Image (cartoon, rainbow over all chains, first blue to last red; front, side, top):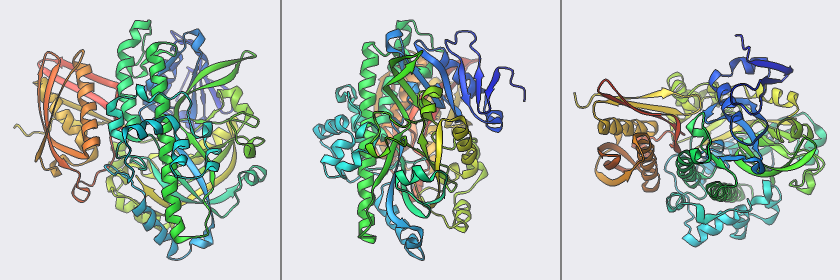
Length: 477
Length: 140
């Protein structure tokens, strides 16, 4: 396929030249095959973001990029608030701060031999609320809910869900500063009342994984991992509260954009200046959404620890790291030799801070942050490390997963849940889910090849390969 | 026939699109709402025993449709209910509705995936040759 609009500038980077109302070029990180498969609509979304006011340097797409709404999934863009830069509800999405948390179990694969694995799968499926309509066991008063929205994982730890040490291994030490619970609607808070400590559905999951490959032994040692280790991964977000904040502000921003002279190439890009009253309100509400996601993953961690304690009384579940995918964060970045405070949107992309960055825990300071990549069900996940090169390439960002290649409607016609369970059972992967159609929609074949996405990410310099993991147990939301 | 299926899901790489067509705008809204239920469960498995009433306003027809679909997602979420039948009345961008349904029954409904929100991507409400088409993409 001819793609005259794409100029290859290196092995794994392509540029869309600035045309029309684009204020910066588009930059896509991908290898030859990934770019070939990238939908024309994804490229249009990259161009649309490039037209937003105050965008700096480029409109970026990660190797797992695919069509989203407004921003593409895998889209990264930074805006300068001092130059009329915008904040976009569509650039964050509905599942605010959806992300991946990984922790050590202290167990190796041989300790899960025989019937123990099945027993553990049953116990996790029973104890972790997952799927549509599931509710948590924690009910919050409105005062407690506001405290949670202000404090995030810090609040959860104060309430007994985990330890202070956990907080060192979460971006922003477990709390997005500047959250404004007062800017979160009563409807959004109502949606969260019964949903603390729930996994959700769709592509959300809890997996027990084993480390099958180590690519960088020095960083792996620093991260405390080795081949044969069993890890736990949780992929979930800010639940009903985040979804409602997205809905409330999308509508308001779309209606108000024109007041600021912002022409939206796609209404879903709903944006207002960061320094406008509505921009500040959304920033405060969105940060509350981030804290809700961080608290939620912290509570889920406590639930998993409880389950493990019953089966493996000596197991110590220590945090590796917690990363968020759908966020807009104020960060310091170098632009034309000067440090600038920018609002970086990552829509389905992971922060990839390299060695020396201020937010990193002392243990990882010389290594870069763990960049946790969740693969599709039954394939592979990866632990990468942030690089300083990524700062120059894309404001310290990397991919977030495999990325869909086939729609849910097409996937549910092509595969059946029960058949997938037995196919994966042959690979010794136990799948637990309440919904067979939900499973079919998440079939591994509906996703891009995660290995190819990781190779392109690593070869482009966005992050460094550290370890590969394959699933043993998957509790699907 | 009154019970003809007048809605469809259309493909979107990440999420699910819904579209409905009818002579009356209110009927198109009702069918689109059924399509929304069908993202999560088979609407025919939902017993329509409990009514939920609501009303809302929009700045125009598209805004009203966005608001309406968002409201159903909200009601499903907070009540932990699914709705199998909808009655909608629209007058001058003001809407009153009754959604009929029941509490989630995990065995019978086997819910697939939870709608998170209504996107403005491909959001459309238009009348052409005496027929209304309404459509949007739901983030799941």
